Length: 423
Ligand code: FES
Ligand SMILES: [Fe+2]
Image (cartoon, rainbow, N blue to C red; front, top):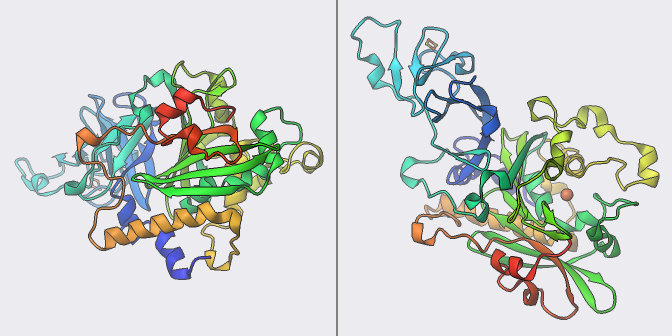
């Protein structure tokens, strides 16, 4: 359980909040490339960390992520005209470039220097693997973009989906670290996927958790037969990502993993981004099967309003939930807690070991920032920006043998060499 104070500390992310201050020190997903597909395409509204923003791609393909409300008198720039190198407000025609410079104030007298005095809020962006990342923190503290394994891959070997979560980001992120729910929430009575047999076999995994430079490495260990155990290795990566053994396969082996981000839109809604990659082949439509569950506005077709289209008959015969979709399972579990769950009411057990570790890590990081220290996983040295040790995989290993004997330092290189089995 968390005190009400710590619950507030972790869940409030708007401007001026301590957690908001922490999240603003990192590059975080802001929108998808597909939302602003080409130069001068229509601008889109972006809700991020409680801020109202607008994103657009200018004539030269550069991306602007601006405060939505015009610096003149506040009209929304979402309705603006995206024209020749800038976004123009429809009320009195003020025009902004991607850096927030006011290029033109046509309602002012000719020769007016007024616009030179104004700087509109604009955040730097980086476009990687179909995601537009933003940095919303102090300019002088801006870190390098972390050079993850998937950053290096050609675009056709990565995929990404985005969906709206009707709850605070932390509920989703906790679910990412919580391996024990796999044995229940995602259980299918008819599945032929090998890993489902492992989950079903042991619903009470033990955890082996270590703190790392990037976050946490989480091993969930399940009994399997007399002499073996099934180990799922996942990672929490600062500030809001979980890497899990899922995604594209080659034969029966995983060919990469998935990175799931939970980014606060407001404190009561969050964006889930599922980024997956294949190391050795282009991704296929089959890899991006989640796309079919997401409707207009990135809302899931099965959602709270329609009770996720739960099928009570299927709940008797097909699956634990009666809901036929992995992505939706997680949403039901985390959204139904309420918009911001009051963790002073919960009762944590041994199955929550990883969730407790996640909260502790985040609280320590918030306090680092409050104390004027640099939080973990801020990359500044380009010579150190080689992040091939954030791995994820799953394997059956001999009982008694430590999981490291298979995953060693859990670097992806090792996982690749030794193979990450069924997933
Ligand atoms: S409110 Fe935007 S130009 Fe006047
Ligand atoms: Fe899940």
